[in-house]
Length: 391
Image 1 (cartoon, rainbow, N blue to C red):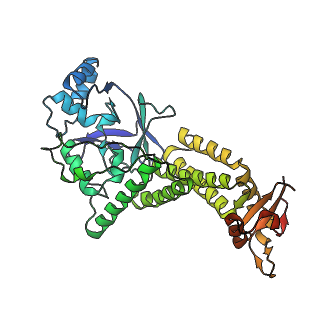
Image 2: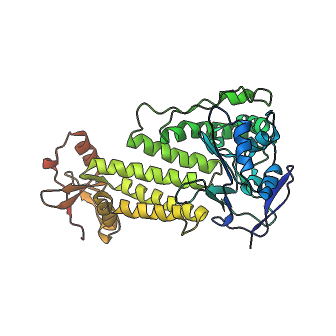
Image 3: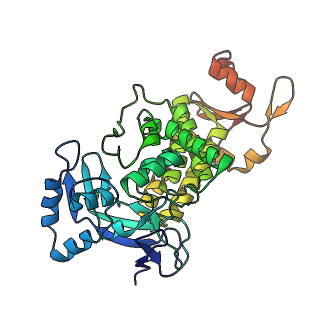
């Protein structure tokens, strides 16, 4: 039984609405691609669209012609409909007849899932937050909207699609809107480098209108000259989680950001080799489990993305540094263990040092750990209490 139905939307035109309460992670609809066009030049042409349209069955052609035309000034109706409803990136775009009926929100309640093969032939719409009966199902049309200000998003939606968004983010006023815009600029500043790109300039969208839409340059993608270090990648990922949560964006990007922070910190732990900072291990565990919790919520326990995250977390736990730290932290020995300094004071263990010559783990205080890492104290001079861990 379908959990949705099509009917007129309060915002104008038609939309997709829940026929019953829908939980996060629920599949709302599955749709097959019916048109695909690879651009031969900078823009789609009417001939390209007409050729793809002629390959459709008569009933599909009728469905296509019933879709929203948008507000762009292309000469033919076919091209206007295609541009207003196509998904894709780069030179390739696609049409999904059922998904094209779903309206937009910059803070959506559903997302597109391309599946384990990450292809566009078949796409699933999945709820990412509770959707009440008779509530409209809404997706975000442009993944870059998470990095744009309200003005930029509004101008683009009016110029390209002919409507204004009325989501919770776009309706903010005064200082709340200024804060939201500032957060989204920060999202741009960290999200693009996390994907290996220089943050683009969106200023051209501040003055975008229907009249200048076709002459306004698009967004160019440029690679970072130097990849982010593990520490910077970790910091950017963690900052991104806080920004996305503050903007109520609860989907796959949030889960991925948490796991990105965990993976980057794990890489730092591996690079430190025989010194294992216990708080780093705690953070890796916390962020990985948070990522899996969010992904389970928005994709289901058995969703391919959730299963993949669990497998990656299991692999991460097999790393010697993390395994040793979690074993120590989970032992009864940890809760009462203290390290005695030379002056007789007792301190909690801050890190573990793996003595390869004796195959033992020694507990270090924070000051000793810093001294060892900075090179002011050599490993051979360490005189700390030894902790043998259970195998």
